[in-house]
Image (tube, rainbow over all chains, first blue to last red; front, side, top):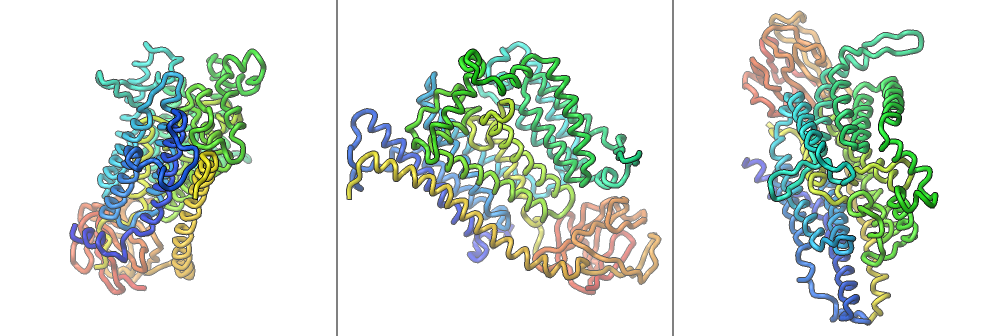
Length: 460
Length: 150
């Protein structure tokens, strides 16, 4: 412990670059809040018509959002003390994306069809809890081996949680967007176990594949030009995948089913380096998609909407959300309408499913590209941590987490842009919602830990 | 200096987007500096991806001849399980016994929670605590002893 204390206060080894990177997220929060404040004043007629340095709003009206800056700095100090050598870019990236999320929730809340003036504050609290979970994860994984040793516990635990939700969901309305939440207690504290299942499955796959990668990569027979994988050793992998898929199709969460499937394919490819697995998985996907398409009407609906959204009878009905989303994006243009000046709340469920359209309308193509760039940096850093990891399990875990962020962003953005059927999956850190924010911060915590040399690393 | 309300909002809008891009630029700069450090390291590593050798001093009950030289790559795992880089078929060696890896210009050895312990110069290593090793150190896993040579 003394060693870590000394590291934290050794100024040469202090995480200066992380502090430096936190400047821009803080500035972004301040600019956004200033903009919202001015527009609010102006719409009540009390605002100034000309701006000079003396009639800017006082800083105290921005107080709640300043908490986010304080929390970012506090997390930064905690990390300097716990993991002085961990990756310096992850916290600023997560901070920037969640500032965007908090600002968007603050801006959208009061304008929603059923106004929720405290939406931004709620999101802020979730982000603060997320920072707490991030630090707790870094602390709890000082020795990361226990994650690997209890791999079946994680997988089975996650699946049981989701199964409980499925039983619970049978007596709720499937058309409500929150049907996959588990309500805990009378306070209406809802959380989505599927977010946790995602992490559990990545840990399980990483642990199982780390033990069996040689078998998957080297064994198996060749029949003519076809490679037959050693199916016996893939039993647990495919078993977990099928259970998760059945659960999510049962919950009508196609996005999550797609995400889980994507994690499976990327991780098995990362572990074995064999394209054969990718081709077989895609084949399995085609068969599964065909069955689901014929079996469930809601799957057919989602697919049909993509091709017919603009037909008059669809655009006012089932395609309304997609059409409004595209109009919002289009009206943003290159530089956007300005934060707080657009009308993104014409899009139903804009704070959850369509937050990318709101960003596109108010920050424009330029802003949306920047957010995409930040996601790319996040994925790049995850894979970089994977490349430099100490053993196969850590490599696969970091690579798997990187794939989760990449697939989630891809699936929801493609859905919003009408490139593929829309599925309600959160845009990491930005979409309003507690469980998703917390799960993402747990993954950031894991990445921070994976990027650190082992606890006892010291020159003997 | 005084701006009209609309002009000021335009300035704020452009500033917000500029901040996002400046942030990307900053992260890329920090990431690039990391990359430069890593390139130097991997260049010195690529020159010889074998970063050291283990010479068997006492093979115990493992089927190894004393004097055999084994290569260390980063990371090298040692143990009885067949997936290890160096497989030691001795009953006193655990399935996953220890690992050796290269970090910050030094070799590190870490015990993976083995049953009979890993000893560096007859000092037992605490499980999961990496310790830097120097050339000519004696490493003992169960009843197998190695000398570390560059």
